[in-house]
Amino acid sequence: MRSFVSTHGPRCLAILVVGFALAGCGAQLGAGGGASSVQVTERDFAIKTTTHVAAGDVVFRVHNRGPGSHELLVVRTSAGQLPFRSDGLTVDEDAVKKAEVGVLEPAHAGVVRELRVHLTPGRYVLFCNMSGHFLGGMHTDLVVR
Ligand SMILES: [Cu+2]
Image (tube, rainbow, N blue to C red; front, top):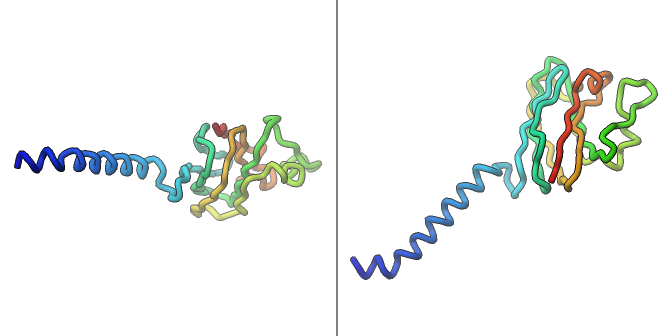
């Protein structure tokens, strides 16, 4: 028995440590493929999510709590402000096309969807661009670092 402990003890301990490390990763990530999972809640008229996330693959899990339909755009912004169309009610998506990293088209209340993106460090805005929704409050800043 004494000989078993001295020969196999350290190896068993190492396996235990690896097991704990993997369990820790699973709790933090959970989205699979090494991506960070970020909860986003949309409602009339607000978007709630985290303020900071680590650079890399990110899966936004987007829940529309309604009562209306909502979409979600993720745009990288250096200026901190997005240009509006001449209607004054919506962001000019053509003007921000190059900075757009992901889009979910409008979905009904109650729908939960995932949007997988790759984010490099910088500032981003998550917003809904249905008429008047941005101005109504459906935008939020996200810092990636
Ligand atoms: Cu909306």
